[in-house]
Image (cartoon, rainbow, N blue to C red; front, side):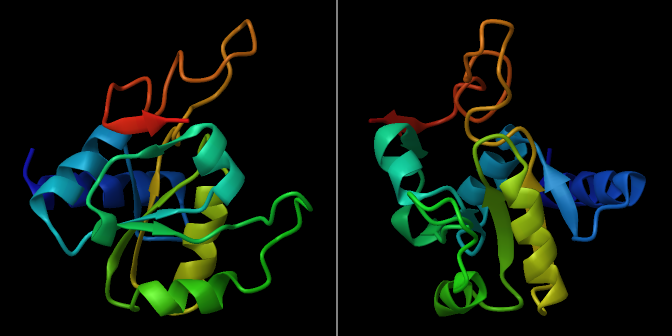
Amino acid sequence: MSDNNILDTAQQRSAAGQFPYRGAVTPQEALALIQSKPDVKLVDVRTKAERDWIGSVLIPAGQHLAVQWNLYPEGKPNPQFLEQLAQVAGPDDTLLFLCRSGVRSRHAAKLATENGYQNCYDILEGFEGNKDEAGHRKTIEGWCKAGLPWMGA
């Protein structure tokens, strides 16, 4: 699937789901965009602790941005989220937001869109995906389950 087709599909998902941001991509689509467009940036909104202890995507450093949505260990929203995002991304950049299972990334994409970022996309399923029947992640969906490049802790 070409980049334009991926973005068209992502935007169709947004229209169908009435998302308040440009679109939503699967983990596989996100990686395809990252590999083919060096200006696409993945914004990992998980905490530093999550990235350190659970794992992180393996993509070029210049395309992997870390801006925490919540602070650890407090669990409170990061009051400097937009300020920190502005230090690493511009309003016209194509931004793919990633979290554990796709909840925080949706909120981050929405807030960024509301604050002038024009090309915000949520990465559906997140890094680990939802829990399976046994309460484990990385088994039914997400970046890891899809077999995409990542490094464990």
